[in-house]
Amino acid sequence: MTMIVVLFNLKSGVNASDYEEWARTTDLPNVNRLPSVAQFSVLRTTGLLGSDAPAPFQYVELLEVKDMAQLGGDVSSETMQKVAAEFQQFADNPQFMLTESI
Image (cartoon, rainbow, N blue to C red):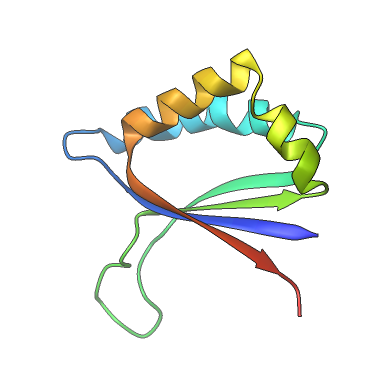
């Protein structure tokens, strides 16, 4: 199973509470309904272990994908295209990393 890890900060001027409300009400429910997705989580970072320094990214998304080929079709829907466009208004240069268990 593939896990997609997304690391990002909010764009300058974006209110964190606005983003988090959108994530709870729009992003999480829509992505978790996709047939190709086993589980989708959005996490807010709180710091670096053993340090007072802030984490380099404000948010982490974890997307456990059952079927990568089907994911391509799922995200091409009109609803998911709208969700993706809205996400791009919040996130500053998100980094999408494909991972697999070892």
